Length: 258
Image 1 (cartoon, one colour):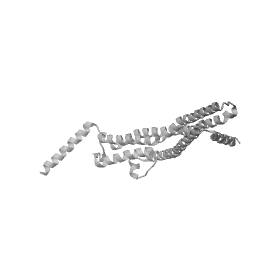
Image 2 (cartoon, rainbow, N blue to C red; image 1 turned 120 degrees about the horizontal axis):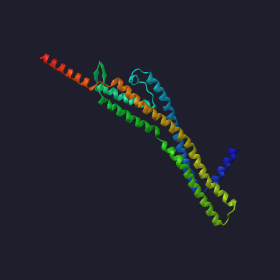
Image 3 (cartoon, rainbow, N blue to C red; image 1 turned 120 degrees about the vertical axis):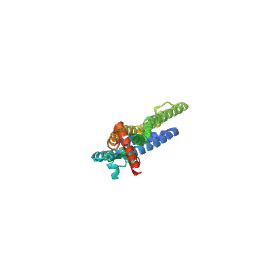
Image 4 (tube, one colour; image 1 turned 45 degrees about the vertical axis):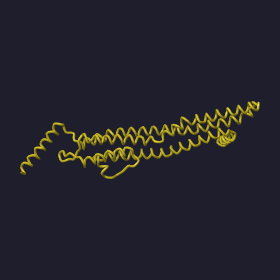
C-alpha cells in the first residue's frame, strides 16, 4: 500500500513538473544508469580480485621456490598481486637467462641487475592500483553531484511555481501544491541517485584499500624472497677476489696453451 502511494505521488509530481524539471530528472536518470553500470562491473571485478588473491597467496606460499609458480604456468587472472608477481618473475627469469652470475653452481644476478626487477614491480603495482580505482570517479561524482543537480531542479521549479502564482494573483494551497510537488521530485530523484552510489562507493573504497595494501605488503615480500634466492649477496671483497682469481685462471690457461 505504501509503495503504491509513493508510486502515485512520484507519478503525480512528475506530471506536474516543468520542462526544466523533466530535463533535470532526465540528466539524473542518465547519471543513475552510469553509476549502476559502474557499481555492477566494479563489484564483479573486486569480487573476482578478492577470490583470486586468496587462491594466489595459498599457492605461492605453498611453493618452495619463488619462481616455481611462474614456471609451472599456473595463472590467477584477476588477482592484482598475481599480475605483480608475474611481471617481476618474468623480468627476473629474463635476467637469469641473459645476464647470470654463477655462485656455488647456482645462477644468480647482481644487485645492479636486480634494481630493474624492483622497477618493474613498482610500475606494475602502480598500474594495478589505477586499474582497481578506475571508474570510482563516477560514483564519487554521483554521490556529490546528484543531490545538487536535484536541488537545482527543485529551486528552478519552485521559482517557476511562484512566478506563475504571482502572474495569476492566486496564492491558494491548491494553486501552489502541484508546482511545489513537481519541483520537489527533482530532489527526490537526486537523492535516489546519490544514496546507492554512496553505499557502493564506501564499500568498494574499503575493498580497494585492502587489495592495494596487500599489493604493497606483497611487493616487500617478493623482493625479499627474490633477493635471498636469486641475487648475489656476497661481500664486495669476496666478489673482487673471485673475479681476480677467475682472471688469473684464464691468463694461466692462455699461457699454457701457447
